[in-house]
Every structure is written in structure tokens, then in C-alpha cells.
Image 1 (cartoon, rainbow, N blue to C red):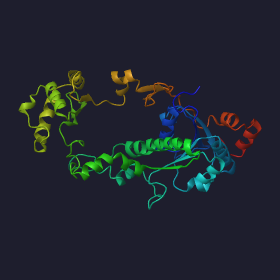
Image 2 (cartoon, helix red, strand yellow; image 1 turned 120 degrees about the vertical axis):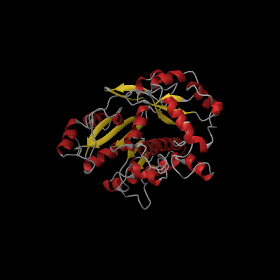
Image 3 (cartoon, rainbow, N blue to C red; image 1 turned 45 degrees about the vertical axis):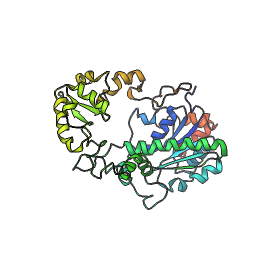
Image 4 (tube, helix red, strand yellow; image 1 turned 90 degrees about the vertical axis):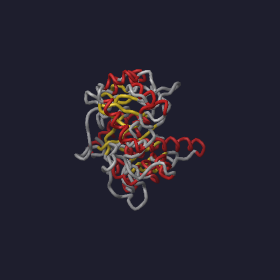
Length: 381
């Protein structure tokens, strides 16, 4: 039985990479019934590995959407769906016969979710790109990095996941809410450039008001401030310090055995180099976990920098159930949490295409003979 606030929502996912699967994972985690349409014969360019968390909690069918029969199967699923998600370049699904107009002709209530790097229009719409390109164009990459050094990619978290998949999921939910009033579906055009720019809204405001310099690595929140940075400990590990407010700064000084009244004013940027040296020296005297233990019960805003292997075992994460083990892989749990309609624990990913026969029979009512003909024609896995 489905659980979660999105129980009963039916989603068709056209297999893709990163942002689309992440958006569908978020929807599936919260109870949506997601059917992933994988390739009938995956090529070498498809990243595949067992127990991929971005494939959890949904069924998967193998369909060749380059065949007329395959397109018809997708449209048949669309008739019964609330949402379709695709991440192809602009115009691709239109050429296949499963674009918005094709799908809305079969199901006017469908929310058609599209995720691309550059958006459905604009000079770069059809260009190739990756997270680093999108976050760079959004003005969100240039400020990240140390003073005097080149910008540092923030993994692929900003464009692919935060500004891409999460933005798409939010847009889909907004369109579903609007559908309650209009009774009509619509197209959600989510762009990773747009989403990356949106995530940087505060930064644009700070710069416009003259409280953020154009020099990366010299500001309060980009590692320029000694009270907002990471420091190496005696055992070669790291702690994160975020003692911005004066009361937190005083607690940090107490944990480190320093007298704040004998130190430079922590907001005086001219004193930041000297203050950083003092903090680095004191923190380097302690092993990470010992120093973290000293900070417990205070507002020093000093926490460990955990590896992905360590994070699931931290007592706070354990108490919150922040991580789960699915199919032998430790991974983040569904979020956020709901008091009346909690999500079930995620289900392990199914092998690509392994639900083809079950879905075609149960969802579309196809008999075994028809399924075999489709298989023989190469339309399904």
C-alpha cells in the first residue's frame, strides 16, 4: 500500500541523468507511483550501476521510444498519469511524438515536466552542457573559491540537483495545485541555469547593497571570514566553524580557551588574517572529535566535517533517521518529514526493464500474446 503525502499520484519518467531522476526520486519518496521508461537496449553512454539511489522506489519498463509501438505504449501510460518527466534537449520529444501537444491530446490534465540545462528557448537552448556550465552562466560559480584562486565547482549539487531536480519537483507540485482549480495540465519548463540563479538570490541582493565584494574568498560566507570556515585538526580531520554572532563567537573562544576581549574584533576585516592564524593554531592542537565534544552544549557553532561514510552514524543523524540502508547501500532518507502521512522506507531499485511485462499487463491490460509481439518487434525489453 502506498504511503506518503503524494500517494495516488501517477508519474511517467522518461529515463535520463541526474536532475530528472532526482526529481522523480523526491516524488517517489513522498508516495508517488513512478514508472520509469528505460531504453529497451541501454547503450554504452548510459551510466549504470547496481542499487543507484536515484532509481529507488519505482517500477521500470524497457521501451524503444524510437518505434511507433513504443511511442504508443508511452502515450497509453500518459492517459492514466498525472505527470510526465523528461530531460531531453528541446524538441526531441516533439520529434518522437511524445511532446506536450501529443500528450495533452491524450490527457489534457497532464503536468508535463521538462528539465534542461539552458531552458526550452534562448540562444543556448540546444547546446550541450553540464552542471559546471550552467552554474557558471548563472553567476553562481564565480564567487566560490579561495582568494586569489580560480572558482571551485560545488560538486554538481547546485545545478543538477538543487537548481535542477528540486526546482522541477517544486514546479510539478505547483502545477498540480493549480490544476485543482483549472482542471488543466500545463508544461513546466525547469532550467538548471534559472534554478542556479534562483539559489543565488541572496548573493545578488548582498552585492547590490554593497556588502559583498567582487573578490571571491574575502567575504563573510565564502571562507573569507575566519569565524566562518573549516580548519584542520591534529589528526588530519576538519571542523566547520560558523560563529558569526557575537554570543556564538564568545562561546567559540571559550571552547578554544581564548579570551575574546584580548583578540581583535572578529568583524574587523583588516584583522581577519591574524585572527585566522590564531584560530588555526588553537584548533590544530586538538583532535577533531575531542574538540567537537568540548563544543557540545555550547553555541560555539563548531561541528565536525564528516565524510559520507561517517555521516550516517552521527548520533543526530541516527536519531532523526536522516539516512537509511536500501539494497545494501546507505543513502539519504526521504525528506521532509510529515506527521500524518509519513513516507515509507524507500524500496531498492529494480533492474532496468524488469517490470515491463507486469506494467503492460496490470496498467495497460495487455495480454501475454500482445506483449510477446511487442518484444519480437523490438519495441520493449
